[in-house]
Image (cartoon, rainbow, N blue to C red; front, top):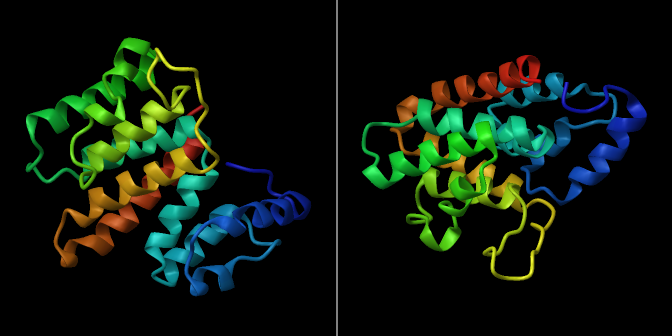
Amino acid sequence: MFIEENNQANTAYLQQLAHISMSHAAKDLMSPDTKNESLVFKLLDNHCFSDAIMYLAHVLPFSKALIWACESVRANSNGQESEQEKYMLKVAENWLQHKNEVDRDQLLPNQAISISTATSWLAMAVYWAGGSIVANDVQPKAAPAGLVNSAIYSAVMLSIFNHSESERETLFKNTIQNALDIDATQH
C-alpha cells in the first residue's frame, strides 16, 4: 500500500497530513491505528468523498497519483471537452509513459487552458511533477510541498463536478476505487 502500515509510520504520517484541508468529519475518522485503505473506506461510508480524494491525492506516490488523475479525467469526461483539452490529456499521458521534456514543456501552465477545467489542472500537475515549476530558460525551482498533490486533487474533483449532482456519488465511488486499484496493481 501507499505507506507503511504500522502505528509509528501512521502517527508520523497523520502529523504530516495536518496541513491538508479536510473536513472535521474526516479528521474525526483518522487515527494512528487506522490502516490507509480502511480510512478510505471509512471516508466513503461517511460520504466524505472530497476528503477521500484529497487523502488519496496526498498519500499515493506521485507516479500513481498522476496515473489516477489521467485516468479520472479520461473516464469522467462527458464529451464536452475542447480539442485543446483532449490534446493536453494525450500529452500528459504521453509524458507519464516516456518522461519526455518536449511533452512536459507543452504543458506549461501559461499555455494551459482555463483553470476551471480538469484537464488544465492535470496539465499543471504533470508539468510541476516533472521537475522545475518554471520554464527551462529560468533557474530551476522545485514545486513546493503539496502543490502537485493539490493540482491532482483539483483535476480529479473537477472531472467529477462536470457531471450532474445525481451522477456524482457513483463517480466518486468509482474514481476512489480506481485509485485503490492503481495503487494495488501499478509498480
